[in-house]
Amino acid sequence: MTQHYLHRHLTPAVGEAQRQAYGQSQAVPPAPESDRLGAKETAFIQARDSFYLASLTETGAPYLQHRGGPVGFLKVLDDHTLGFADYGGNRQLLTTGHLRRDPRVALFLMDYGARRRLKIDGEAAVVSLDGDSSLRQRLWLDESEAGEPERLFRIKVEAFDWNCPQFITPRYTAAELEARERPLRERIAVLEHERLQAQHPVREPSSQQPER
Image 1 (tube, one colour):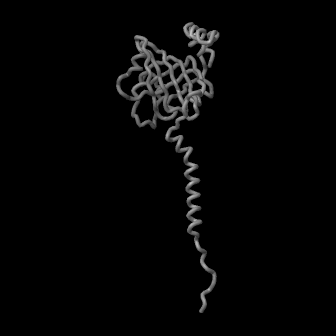
Image 2 (cartoon, helix red, strand yellow):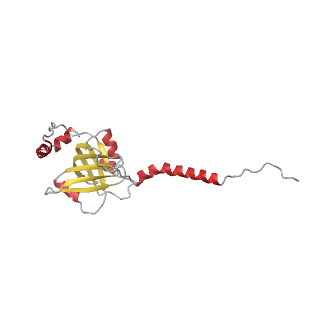
Image 3 (cartoon, helix red, strand yellow):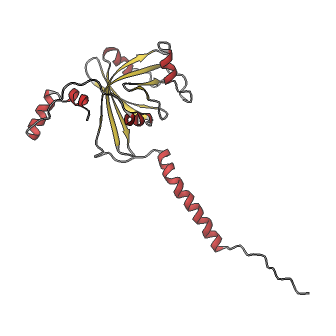
């Protein structure tokens, strides 16, 4: 867990809970600067086709939603900024509305097959399509079947944390299963062909001349 993530989440109430449960609490680290995304985080984020996004209502109630798209739709703009294009959905605009009052968000990214997860704290801003042409160009998904996006999201990364793999049940997408199964199917096809050849060998034409 990064120092900044610990500093943000090891609150006095957490320390009290730790002391009651374990007899002592973790020391709160000094407040460092915001975490910077490295090569490991960047590669992980850009390989995802979905993530969970949490925001807060005006009354402080938590709200969580699933965001999905083509692999890499969540872009790493630099070492402290993420972004994605927002396409039309159920027209409720809950997250969009929440961010007008409170920009704080949390992202939860999963790789079930590899049993890895990344948590990100940040502050999000909603940007209109004509509000930042360079951002629009970087986030636009030309191959998306969803049509034209309605708005853009830009997220300033404050802190992140890699979780341990314990209790993550491995799950695989159809594409991942296809990649794993393809060599097996190809091998089965070869063996089946060899089996059929053994059962029905091809007879070589005879070289003997017929008697006259």
